[in-house]
Length: 359
Image (cartoon, rainbow, N blue to C red; front, side, top):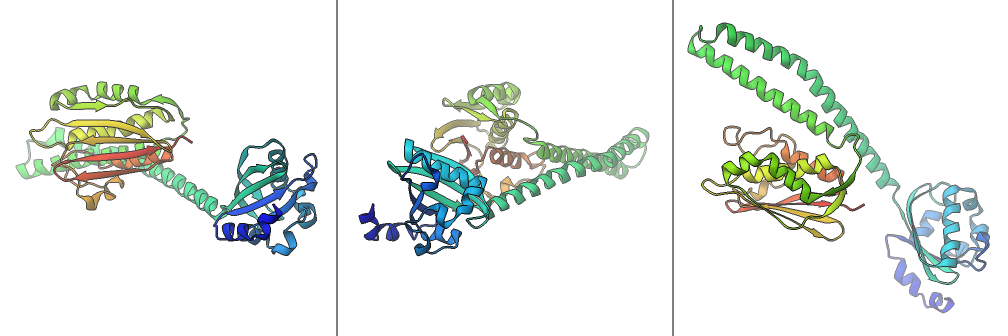
């Protein structure tokens, strides 16, 4: 070990890394106070606010005795001792430091080198965790706003709808043609507004208060085929699937995800062409699904825009809907720590991909 250090290999290898790397020696496997610093790269030295001369070759107890007084520090040092004695690797996940290192949250893992020696990998993720927490708070606020706004809008909308119904019953056919047309416009507009409010409420409720469980995606597709049986028959749609996985997820939300993509494949089909929808999945660092159709396709310049809420590429006269289905899909995928994207050629068809994390 000493030869390795004097050759400067460790310094040249690890000092340029963005992750903290440290090597520790545990001479007495029954005594956590015997743990010594062997090597620390620049990242850890910076987080400790120490230089090499203050640390290398010395016991943690000499350099940073306060580490033994802190729950996070003590847990990490005990892990050094355990791994040095028993071997293996231990991922400690997120550890909070507040005294012997710069106060914050760190990702930490400990790895066996040889008996009595371990190395640690450490990354300060304080700002990342802070940003994640802030984003979560903003998302919760947005959901609350959408829910409250939708509820507040429903009451005046019900009043408008009731008044329009009274006008239709009392005056339709008794006024001039232009007046009848105006009443129809108001009636249709109130129906569309109700649909938008309902869609907004649905969006705000996705995933709320639900627990993930094991789900067979093959069974989900079969349920969707039954739900869409009428439109599948009317359009002569063919749905092909490979053997899909069983995974941990939110059942209703995943059904909504698949159903939206399948429904879009049917809705946006080419004239005089039977829709063909192929569904498959591949496994690499989680599951990646592909839902492919032979429809009208999407202009590449819109491939990000389509996942935004209430974004439409076509008029209501061309294709009905609130323009929120793919926004639903995006939210469902993100609830499963994944992402969704599309590859498409206008006139040829579209392939929607989404990933589902196994963690």
